Length: 235
Image 1 (cartoon, rainbow, N blue to C red):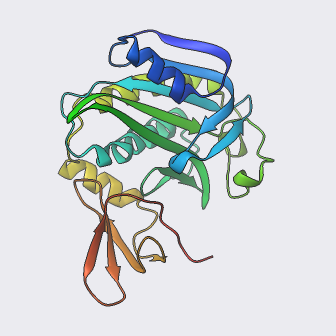
Image 2 (image 1 turned 90 degrees about the horizontal axis):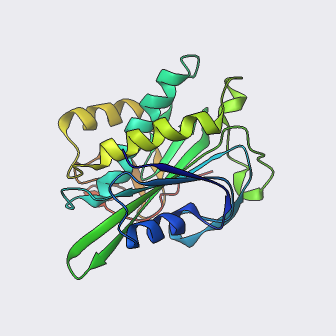
């Protein structure tokens, strides 16, 4: 497994990992920072990532690049399983399409996958993970968040970095659509199923597809499959 690079501070581990990939870094190369000052989330959102959290990005060069929309869901499955094995006292962690880990109805972690293309050929994918561990949660953007340390006293970001990087690299090697086993595992953790959603389409969440789309049973009856976007629930 390629070396995990540890740095005290970086603007964004995503940007640092893209730079490593551009320089030819192999599948599984990863960078973890104690602190980010321009961390990036979905839709270009930025926030300050304080020390104590796990701010990690991994370079992936998957053998398949179809159904890349399913990748964040696959990574969510391996991370929830890893965290629950590491901390058996944790309650079951839920997964909220497309990229959030939910614990106690609050966001514990987020996943961001960014591909770089040359025409129709995918050059690489960077998979970024932000997990709240012992970091402060005083930013307005974290008002609906929780931390591992709120649930287990022994949580430590530094010791989680290597096993998380390995799990991500292993899960991202093949990529492709979700298997039936993965779909069943996701269904057991699905935070949205049965919940009312108002965006990107109004209706009731009804699971996911193998390609990583969210199924929404619309108010008018037909089921819509949503491949991208940010889901909004009332309240």
